[in-house]
Amino acid sequence: MARVTLDEIRRAAERQYGDFDIALPDGTTATLRSPLRMSAEERSLLGDIESLVGAGDTGAITEALKIAAKTPEQAARLLDALGGDLAAAAVLFEQWATAVSVGEPSPSAS
Image (cartoon, rainbow, N blue to C red; front, side):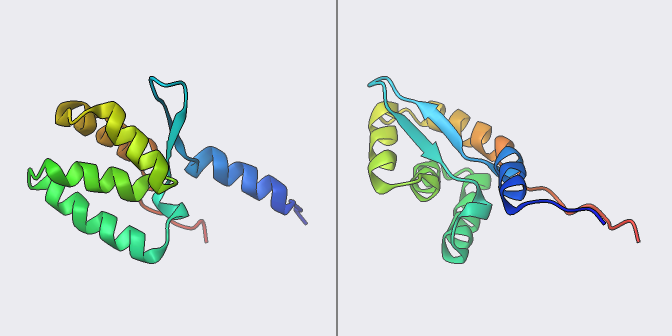
């Protein structure tokens, strides 16, 4: 019988669904969390905002980044560093969304 430790599972989860770190100009790091590391309420809000982003509401991008940020302070530092540049925010959002994409579950081999 196969046996794994919970630490091994956590390391695998971190590799597959880990955070997305952004190095800021002030030398600090802002962390955007994987949706799987968010509360159900945060995921729901993020889904609503992603629909707005998909419809072209560029202002919704900053709201999505605020929700995804690990802390409100990190969100504030990130948005301050972006300086209102919606194009850069959009690229960041796309890169984060791609990096943390959960995708569809694989079919079981039963």
